Image (cartoon, rainbow, N blue to C red; front, side, top):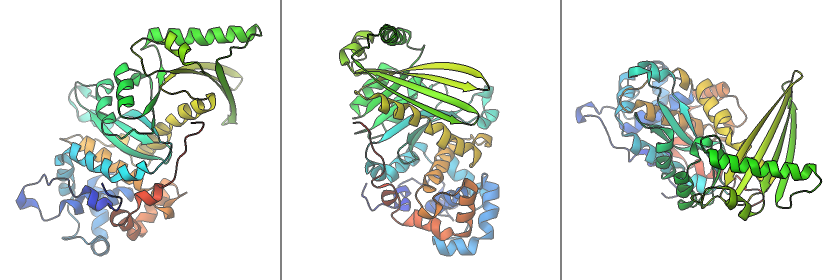
Length: 395
């Protein structure tokens, strides 16, 4: 897709799902208004209709609407019926040129439960959506919904296949530590940093023993030559935390302790996390496998940045956009409405006037200034907003 593609042009290929006799409101107008309503903090289509109708004259002028503001039923029907794969393909294309301009890309992949939607599902099944989050600039670049009778492990490859991973580091929690995932990330041009837990007992035991041996040598005054270390301490919120990172610098060591099928894993790392709060100290140890040699400092960056997807994306979706309270689950609405909220989430990062504002203050800004939203829809914002951001330390 060309660099001069706007949001409206990117989403025009979405096929019209409604019958011809129900086309009073063009599909792109419905999508644009739904994004705008979400930017302004409206969580349901009923309150969105009321909010937009109050401003119908102004919005018709600013957005060039063909027939004004549709009813909440129109919004609901459209987002139930849009093909979610087509909608996501347009979503990815909209951002592709933008995020390819970012250097040193770090993509975090993680699943999120749509808890309230489970109330309407048979047997209380909780739907999940897996997202790809670009940590360097704080936007989400793709997602998939996990279908019924499927799980996160089986669906992760489908998300990875949507992404151009050339030059990217990909982090996934322990559920992604599978040889098929490693091979696919490398085939797509990326590198991985995956946490090893009890779901891979042989690998975890081998890595743990390797670092235990290093500790014993250091205790006897015989430092291990093939490791790099880095330590960071933080104070705040009534606690003191120290994270000590150690990585192997010898690819042969990594190959000796890992399964033969893990052909792309060439480096192993450890993080020892010690936290003291109210006089009580707890210790956790995490192990990692990586497909490229990194310093201990870079392992610290990758492992810590991964949790931005929880703290900066999932938290905002729940607290600001109210995702964890929404019960929509008919037809394709779970996937499409999750993507809709992520479009709005990304747009809040693309407007200089919104930089530094809290979530609710951004909602007020877009409510008072629909012309700013119009810039995001009709002008070239993503590439310029993200250009040149990001870096890959110690590469």
